[in-house]
Length: 186
Image (cartoon, rainbow, N blue to C red; front, side):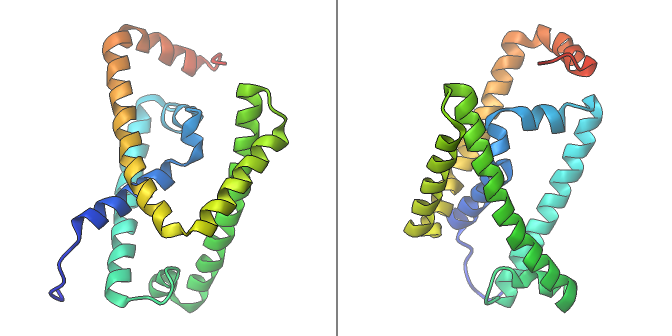
């Protein structure tokens, strides 16, 4: 190494932020878990393992390359791994994808507040847009720190809820899986 000491607190905060951003807003309704991780029964475990290995591999290598190369911009990592042309495409694609994700989140906030509380859809869209503007105006570094702490808490709470549910209602799991498998779940 270069003699610099690793700041493990910062590493854990950034890891927590990555977890939280990966979970995303689709986690709020539970549909993400039902649709992606239970739709194929036990075979879903293979998907989870492949995703976890790929996720760890590319996040570790992106972080390592960023630390070693001291890129001017975070997106320069794409050019480092993919070359000038494909790297430039990945840079623009990821930026465009982030903007498109914002519109999906606005739609999600609009529909969630409409479904749960009966608000007109524009109310949720306006609330999320205003909150996003305030967040960006206040600076994103503090957001990463806050989300880095919240992400692991979300994971711990979900694991606890899952374990409590399995212990308390474990006998109902086979019947629930049959409902999901039959496609009659609403």
